[in-house]
Length: 260
Image (cartoon, rainbow, N blue to C red; front, side, top):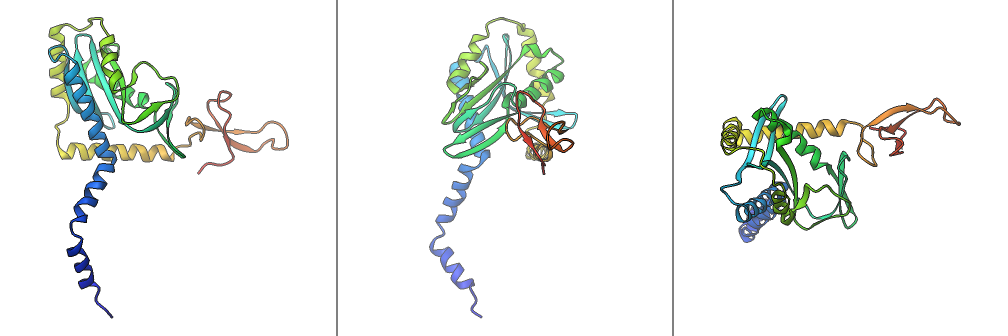
């Protein structure tokens, strides 16, 4: 039997310079790297377009919750309120409404469902309000899409692209936090956040994976993403037969005879 080891070693020694390129290509296409780039774009826009003396930026804040942790991309503290900013680096057409459980990303013939970022950021707002001991009316949720994406449905004012982020923040003019309170809130956030370590990030990633796994096991409407409920036919030849129907009926009439 021929030993393939010398052949393999010869190929590696000949084309070794392709290995780093493949590694870097994989990193550049990873969701993690896209997230880093997206957050960097938002950071740059905030630092260039907003007065640092009026708006204090805190990045990558991990806060403890009752059942794990939640991670906030950007917290912007000002006398006009606290802005909790969630960044999405995506391309293609984006479809979604404020109340939909899931939004849709469409790139040519490929369709991908993802969690409504407004719902995702709602948890961030509630967690931060509880940690700071303030009303969530002082906190503004903002969703920023960066990358080559285009909204194809009507979206709320607080869902925008990188250019619209600054415009939205500046549109909030009422002073609702005193200078002293602003400094106190900054200190509370800094003291209440978990340390920025690899362990903190690893634990949070594991927590998110568990959430995703739990949601995948739930029965969801294939059309709108809402919960499915079990019903029984009352009329016709199928009377008495059970089926799964969307909880948003009659607004959504999707049905399934079975759900795995």
